[in-house]
Image 1: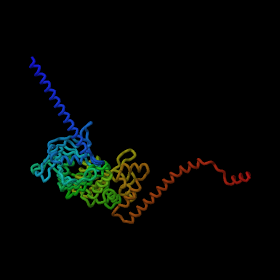
Image 2 (image 1 turned 60 degrees about the vertical axis):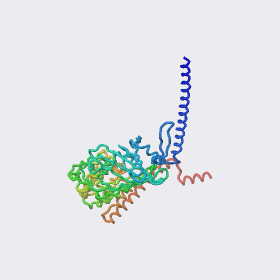
Image 3 (image 1 turned 90 degrees about the horizontal axis):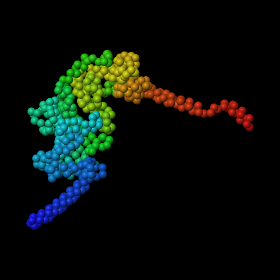
Image 4 (image 1 turned 180 degrees about the vertical axis):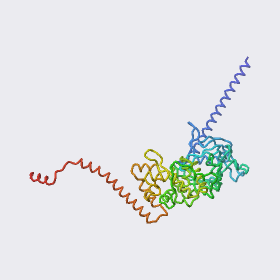
Length: 498
């Protein structure tokens, strides 16, 4: 019995020692973890204004500098331990990988793979995001303050499921598209200033990436290539101007969409007799909608660049870059939503129509279908003939230069100008003078005379408006003043007082 009691006492003392050691070890580990957490928090602490994100949740949340995170992640002793890790994000699930130095170059490479992936787009492109089947970013250091790498964007064909973005084999050409770019970035301010260069890539591959659901891709024969250079500021400025796109398009042409049938298509706008190319309305429409109509092949690179620049500065869609051919495509098939996919459909049909119909037929079809607002009963006024009769009570061929310029000036915003017409009996005077001054192919003497007439009308209208505003004020002032006696009566009263 005594032996058993002694054994129990020994075991009890041993258990207390083990428990004490475990408590000491646990406390030491907790202190070490807290120390590491504190060091990590200090190491990742962003500087004032630096691009940052939040790691963790609750009391353990850490505000971390993104440049510091990237620097740590591309360090071998950290990057090797990130290999195979998957993280949730707003883009989609991000799978990290690590390629040691010497495998793909002198420097190690951190890869970030996203499948599927939702990429943010600048507001000026018309939609907030672009969803791609797969995207992969390769990051390596290039000195102390620079990064470089590759960007792969994977697209799927008509019968393609989601696939990992990898260099494609020739046998997979019909089923998979991967568009690759090289990029580099340097530290600048709170983040990086990056440049991205996509080499010349078949235009069809870009269409498959940007709008994989386009039904026209199955029927259209698309030629040409697109190269792209982008300058990007990270993080983007609050006003949304931290980017610049410079496309380079070569040999772009489309066929096979059947636009030749538009020449026989029925329209609800009624019949519009063909207008001569020298008619004032024809020339005024070209002046306001597409000055280089006879020079481009369906799209206007200069106008496209100007629209991108204007929208980038505004941080939203403020200016369209559509040609008259693209506007006809919008009227015939593309619809009214201002989305990237719709703009690409417009482009495809415009390029096809340029080959199948020609400039003259495109221009007449546009004049026969263009919208000119709605009437007082809310019915659509479309086609030049209907517009001429609705606004001026005459046929389109009989329009005067002043009337033709008025109709052309309405096309930039038909609902607004139609409402202005109903309220005031005129359109925007400044817009009217601008259109008149842009008309080409008419005698300069006639153009100058029309501009002078419009300026005189605007001056007179401003004077009439000022007078109309002044008359009620004068009447009110007269009513508030006391009635005064005639001067002779005042003089006699003054004599009596003396």
